[in-house]
Length: 396
Image (tube, rainbow, N blue to C red):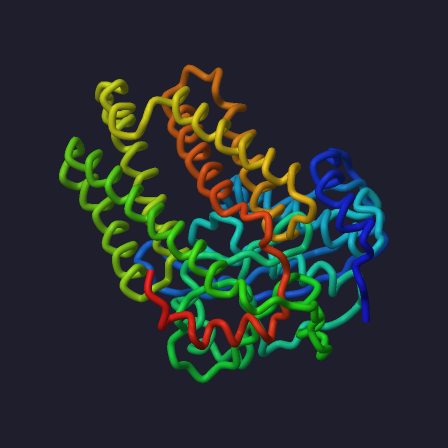
């Protein structure tokens, strides 16, 4: 059994950012593990993408994901985060190894939703533990090891069940109604918990204040509902300016978002609405239309960034003034800070594509900041499961 020391949790986010090394190495040892990664295709259907992770020794910190032409940059970045977290949390020097993740697929691979499972797999490689062949997992890794909710979990559950998996690990905070399938679902709070489950151990437990349940889930649900409606409205307005074939693609994602809302899958709804707005904006720019009209719909880049920065600063001051803060609330604030930073790195670019990405990142930064409730802290995973039994009866 393994425990993550406090110093690892504190230093990991800093080291993740600091360690970027490019080199070559001759390997004397290699370990590998195969993961069945749940994903969602462009039609909104669940699929399983096989991926083999190779851990090479000795190395120099090289991290790669292939096929290069199919793996999006955000997925490559999430693989790096997963590797550095797994190495640091198991007290290995990430600069002593190299890592390759080979996705066995002809589909485009994007997003960070597999990063939690990839981190779990790498940890098991470091520990020399085999992954049960009947188990799979989904969830985004946070830099401190928490497992965050992702989109499309119901579709992924169906795909996992249809593929013969008997156990699926999902984030404990995934506030979504799951379909009735012949597969066991285990909710966990962190990657460390996931490793424990897959190694046959009992997840960690932490003292809990049950009274915050409705307030916490109410905040999360209402935030995602608001985000969904905003991005759908933006996408619909931009789609009016597009060629019918382009508009049809945007409308398809809006339909997916509406369906997710109906199923009370709020995180998926917000994610799909975001994709609709992104695709609509990119199609608008590619058509060569007046960019100023796009900013009238989407929001002027400087103004959106400034609004996000002001809200994040105000939230940070609240955290600094509080005598005690919850780690989950602090994590949300950290996510907001990272997204604002990514938005601001593109602020000086004159390319309309970069400005669209900058604006959308600023909106996501604002959304995370509004989730940064300073009393939001870890709870017992078993207790969170109980909350889910009554979650769908609550009205927002």
